[in-house]
Structure formats: C-alpha cells, structure tokens
Image (cartoon, rainbow over the protein chains, first blue to last red):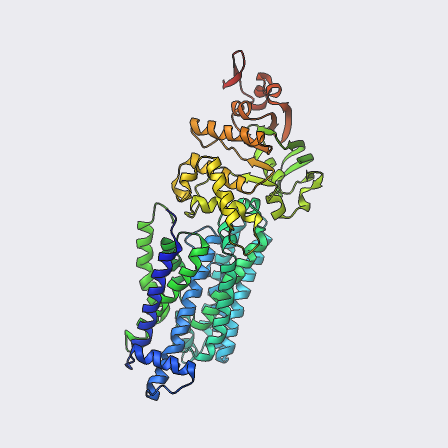
Length: 337
Length: 253
C-alpha cells in the first residue's frame, strides 16, 4: 500500500520535539523545559526573563547554537543522502559519494595547516567540496559512455581516494603538537566550537540546497528511473542531474565545513525515512530532514555528556550506524522500499 | 503526423550498428520490427525516439528534424515503453503512471487534479486500476508491462514505441498486450514495437519491417512480408508455416 505522508511526518515531528528537549535539558548545568521557553520567549519579545544570567547563557550561547547546528547538519546530510540515493538509483550511496566530504576535508585540513582563522577554514572546506565534485563531474563527463552514472560514481571513488591521501600527507607534515590534534579532531566531527555567528551561513546554505531539492521533488522521482526512460518522459537528464548534484553538494559541504566529517547519517537516515513514507520524494524529503535533524540532536547530546571529554560525532554515528545498517541489510532484503 | 527516418546510419560512438535505413511510422498504424538478436532493433528504436543521435541521415517528425524538438516537446508526442524491469524503489503504481505526466507539468509542479484523473483513466483503460496503490516492485511481470504502457498513455502521445512488449510475459498476458497494441492503433495512435515472434506481428501489426545486420531486408504489409522465405532469410533458420483458411502462423524449425 502507498504510505500517506501524515504518519511519517507526525512521527518525525514527535522525534524532533523529543530531540530538541533532550539536547536543551541534558548537561552538567541544570535547565528545565520551562526555562528554555522563558529564555527563548524573552529573547524574541525583548523583555527580561527573570532567570539567572548563567541559565540564559547556557540556553542562548552554549546549548542553543549547538542545537540549531546539530539539527541543520543532520537534516542536510539526510536530505543529501536521499537525493544521491535516488539519483544514482542505488540505496547504498551516501552524500560523500562524489567526493564532497573528502574535498571539504582536504580544504579544511589545508586551512588548519596554514594556521588560518575559523572562517577561512570553513571557506576552504566549502571550496574543497565544490572543487572535488566539479573535478569528479569533469572526469565523469569526459568519458562518454552508455552508463554515465557508473562512471561518475567510479570517478568519485578514485578522486575521493586521491583527496584522502592528500589529507594523509598534510597530517604527516603537520606540527604534531598543535596542528595534528586539531586536524584529527576536526576530521572526526564535532559541534563543540559552533558559535551563533557560524549558524547564519550554515542556515542559508542548507536552506537554499534543501529548498531546491524539495522544489524538484517530482523531477527527482523521474530521475530515479533509468536514464533513457527519464528522457523519454520529458526530463532533460543532463541539466537536471547537475542541478540535483549541485544542491546536494552544497548542503553536504556546508555541513562538513561546520561540523567536520560525520558519516552514516546520510546513508542510514534516508532508509528509515523511506520505510515511513515510501520512495516518493515529495513525502520522503521533509521526513528525511526532520529525522536526520532529530538523530544528530540526540547523538550530539551523547557526544557532550556521556564522557568527561567530548566524544567525536563521527565515532558515535559509526557506532550507531553500523549495527543499524547490518540489521537493515538483513531485514529489507526483499525490496529497498 | 509521421516519424520518418531516411538514409539513417545508427549506432554508438564507437560502433556502427546499421546503415541505409528508411522507415516510416504513421498515426493509426502499428508497425512491427523483427530481426535476429544484435540486428539493430533496439538501436533503431532508440534512434527513432531521439534517445540516440543518428550517425548519419535524419529522423524527422512531420518533416521537422527530431533534434529540433526539446526533450519535453518530444515526450508529449512520442512515448516509450521499455522492456519490463523490476525498478529500484518501491513507487506505487499510481506514482509510476503519474510520472507519465511529467512533460505536461512545469519544472517545480506537483501533479494536478487533471494529471491524477488522466493517470486513473489509463489504469482503468488497461484494467489495472485495482493495482493503483500497490508497490511497482511487488506486482507480476505482466502487470508491470501494463503499468509501463499506462504510463506511456498518460503522456497522451501521438506515437507509442514499445521494446519487446511481449518478451517477458506469459501466454495470456501476451494476448492482452497485443490486443492493447491493436486497440491503440485503432484509436489513432502510431505504434512501433519490436518482437521476436512473427506471429505477434501478424496478430497486432499492419506493417512489418525486417532488420538483419543493421539493414532492412523487407518491409511492407505483414501478410505480404511475413512469408516463409523472408523469415528463413531473416533468421537463417528453417521455418514451418501453419496455414488454415483464414490465418497463417509460423513455427520455428
């Protein structure tokens, strides 16, 4: 039976509310749900909240930016994953398939190596992601074959490996006391350094890419058919593929620039979303965004509270994602519905 | 309207499949394309659909080169029914048929009430409206073929091009699809289909075109073209005609 969009949306909105509550309330400094609402309301209305400055600071400056960033990054990675899985007609691909993550990683690592500032490092990461995908695309379209998708994916694997060794080289050359720990920590993924000012660029980039993908939702359904069928149905597949890849790369690079490399979300969350809504992108994309956001909210809360030191996000998502994916492989063999 | 190819050379960048091909598909007429494996049937279909550029010569739609039409304009005139596939994602049958409306909507549009009505009409016309909410990946091969045909009809085209529409079907479903092909032509559409079975051409097509090694060896009314001699030449194998007073059929060997 075709799934209605309502239950999927309802479930993901409930999870999102729970994720927000957990992310705001859990931590060393006690904050109640009432405090959170009071502080947010007073901020919006401009009236004093009557709470201690420490509570206000925790809500607005410590946990608030992290909560928003975790939601945006989780949502971005899931939406990009869903888009790439549909476009490549392969449920096993993830947002980094075309080298976006490894390109962004190399960019950021270069920035750290040259001791640049935070903004410059983020800009480097973003440019790295776009250049990597551009290179993959150039290689892919230079080879004129009957299976452009396969060539594109293979080019992504090869260029991703090259960029990975670039990262390795810079780690080898980096100063082992200052730069190497910074590089390693960033590569494993973290939202600890997120400030309110970082959120603005992250928000606009993620919102722009996600809006483009949501607007193209029905074209994306057709693009998940074999190339020739999509063209016979009236879709100019070349430009459409560039538009989808560009939008998905935009949101991936923006989230890598903000939070480092956080794997698995873009692979696993679209599957959960698809099991709730079916593969129709009109229903899938919003639910994937909400679920991905909720998932990273919970993971980030664990990352900052479970141990005396921050646990890298990429490590946690791998611990959560790997068993889940194995279970998924075993339980969904009959169809990738 | 007519789709015509003249002095066509067909093939891929690295491989020429056929040349010197002249072919016409007219509205209200079913044309069957027969020939041995590797003879160029699918390549010719893709060239006539505009999915593959001709290596030489021209494909025209009403005298205007096919390449002068946009992908979207083409999809509103010519619809393609590919060989049955299982599909990667479990779209509902209704969603699959609605994809046939793509060329009628704008870039960001969602299917309109009219699109939904057209899709529903096509499902009813092919007798599969009970499948509308089932996942495409979970229905039978025969049902999938009918769904792909419904999707093509939802394009509201003037021509339907089918690649081996009966190849993956059981005997009963073969009859059903051939019957539909006949009805489509009767309703004024131009139909072009490939088949491995000359009897299917005799059953549903007005004209047949025999393609061997990338060249047309015979072309014309089915009853005139599908003879023992022509078929034996075409396939390089003996053919046994079975004749009664009104019909003729062929057995291999």
